[in-house]
Length: 153
Image (cartoon, rainbow, N blue to C red; front, side, top):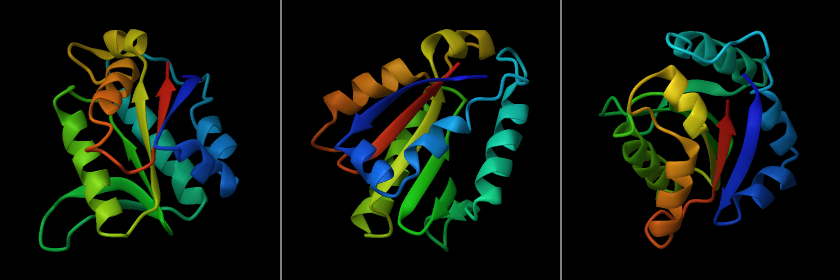
């Protein structure tokens, strides 16, 4: 697995850079020992959780105590979401990040997803960064949380 590129929605790159976390965040996805392909998602998830945990991120954080809705991780005023499943899950993840932002629990988020090419190696109809970036542009006035999309392959 390797980091491929960043897309900054609503100036998210500045938020992560201001906190001196952008380079660290992209470095998480520099893991050449992890090969992208069918069945790799558990290994990627474990690797990412380990890296976030080492830096003090709370994992699998409920966004609302009465419901089972979670984001992958949170620390201070930042949220992190990793998605490697069906494309239909991505808008739901974006909605959870937007909720946290409107509830003033976060100031910015990161959303890590495979590139289109990597998604095709993982499986059928898997979320991919190119589509997420296009949809964020389309819904620019609806999804207003600053989101840093991290594309990995």
